[in-house]
Length: 319
Image 1: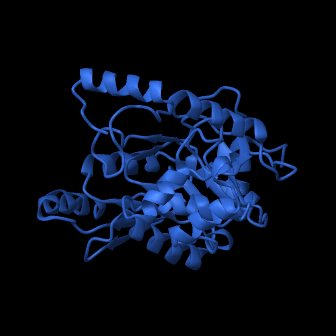
Image 2: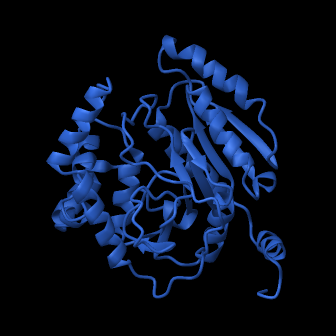
């Protein structure tokens, strides 16, 4: 295989593996949905991949116009192997929609790639995700693939294993998704009982436990924090990237769960990202420390106060 050209190697890889379906969740942001689709269409493997677009119904009468605009657009999408459109008849909300969609398609296909409408993909995103899904399909200690790097830490390797799941451009298998526990209270109780909250919070530098507690209190409806906790408690790792294949454009005040600012900005890596098997399958402790350092730098009281002052001076009064 190493004697073949890059294009020939790509063809061999795609011929030898089953391409995962792409799940794209949209709501009421037509401009974001269009950018997401345009970027996906520039991906290698797009034409050979099936795309499932989940369109949530309007939560309020004020959202009807923009939801209908999004739905009009997605019915014009082509360029993929096949496009499936699922229009919710009532408002599910993001968490219920993602949990239902991922469960349905991962049970049907065995694996899936998941995106939201504010995510822009690099040209080799699909190639990387499908190759990683194939490479680690039989490795039970790896349950998640995350393609976004917002730390911009040059010390991170191209790929590494970490006990944490990011939710911006990710993939999984049915064997891992079966561990998803929607019961936030049970997850929180187990984290506290096993005295794991400090580690779960990256040595106390970021409030993931607080986020989970707020979910149990009905103050947020995050599916992602429950997925994170589910795999963390099972000691299952995520394959992460040190060069980002995802850019999140949702921090413009348009999203339900994203405020203003560019705290989690990333630079799209436009080349092929090398993927080599990681052995042994253990957490990269240097990478974990890089995340601890990142959160210590960006989540301290002083850092948050400075960001708030800067946003206020710019007229951004969001959270």
